[in-house]
Image: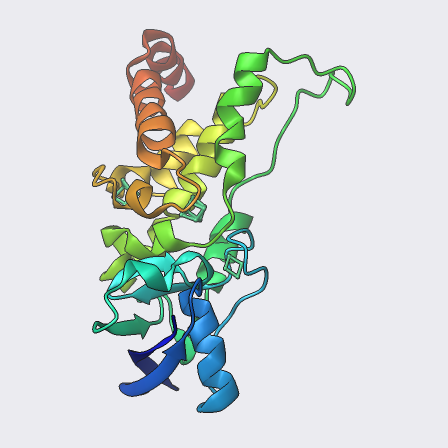
Length: 248
Ligand code: SF4
Ligand code: F3S
Ligand code: FES
């Protein structure tokens, strides 16, 4: 059965904006993105929202619904009370372009700062041999749909613009961890993770893991093991000896 829902949506651009109230029809089986599209069709043709697949796979429709980061296309209206006012705002950690659309280029910049897969020079493509266990370990991280909701909730940058230059964020910690776990990747990942990508800023609050729509265990399976390997390297007697000899 259809009903009329109350929506409060953030509208604005150029650093200014406000919440606007709407009453809009909802039909059985709909998701928040359907309702936003109905608003565009019937009341606010200029309401900006980013979306693409409507199937939880492109990561475009990230927004904050009642203060929590969610995919608009995967948030069923049936999870709310019919009498509830649903508040929809843009991701807070990134600058707003217009209405619900944010500028997520910070994330692409951070992606470019992670050197790509670096195999040994003497192993040719086609010669790589991996254990199934190594394939499966990194498979989890490759499920990332780049919705950037983990980046959005991480307190290190959510309220601290000043940390952005020195912190790549959980999405890129899983990328670095994936490469570091790869048996054929020979690039040095541990020191850069700590020194350039800001792994040390993470104090394991696990907010990133909580919001990941792909249920990637960002903290337990990527960040904590990566932190352990960084520490192991630091206290490895051979590395220590090497650094002393090198300094002479
Ligand atoms: Fe989104 Fe999860 Fe990827 Fe983060 S790790 S960008 S929350 S899919
Ligand atoms: Fe941020 Fe996740 Fe660490 S939310 S503090 S990167 S555990
Ligand atoms: Fe693609 Fe929502 S539109 S994830």
